[in-house]
Image 1 (cartoon, rainbow, N blue to C red):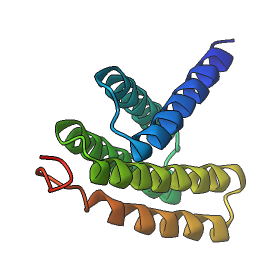
Image 2 (cartoon, one colour):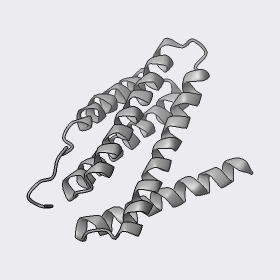
Image 3 (cartoon, rainbow, N blue to C red):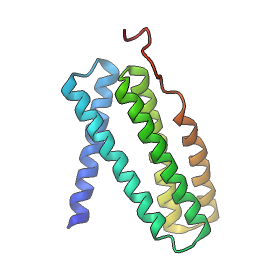
Image 4 (spheres, one colour):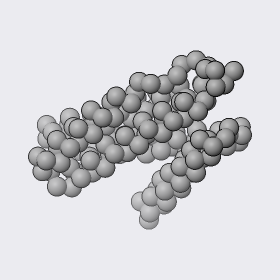
Length: 150
């Protein structure tokens, strides 16, 4: 029952995130919308972090599992840093960067789940590829105001 409730919360936060992302790309968000966007984003990051930390604790000494769970923890940490930059400088460029970064980390999570379910060498290397793609998205945030927002 708790798992079902958690799954619903995750789906609700994902839905909120993507709805507000769409709005943010069309117009400036109100303060209330910004807060909802940031809250759902932080919760989504928390869900990812919890998943990778639980997997890291339960990998039972499997070397490959240890690598990919630690990679996931690194990606989540970078995603949190990116959201903090976005929070401090809530401009369209950072929203776009964060959404691309978030999407790559979610793709890594999907590759991780696939590997965890079947443990094939091919899915392990797909996970590593997804990690390499996602790691590049930690750069590219705008740390100061640009001409689009003065």
